[in-house]
Length: 56
Image (cartoon, rainbow, N blue to C red):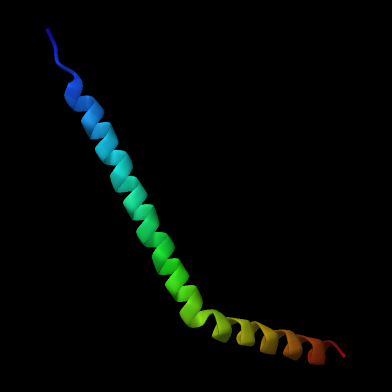
């Protein structure tokens, strides 16, 4: 008889690894947003003001 029990454990292991990777990426994005969010927002506001001035 063939024993395919190891396939089930490997599939579960792959899913856990995938979830961990996604969680780490989400954490990095959240930290970057918190650290750089205000700077990026102010840069976009400055660019918007500059374009509006040039349009007049």
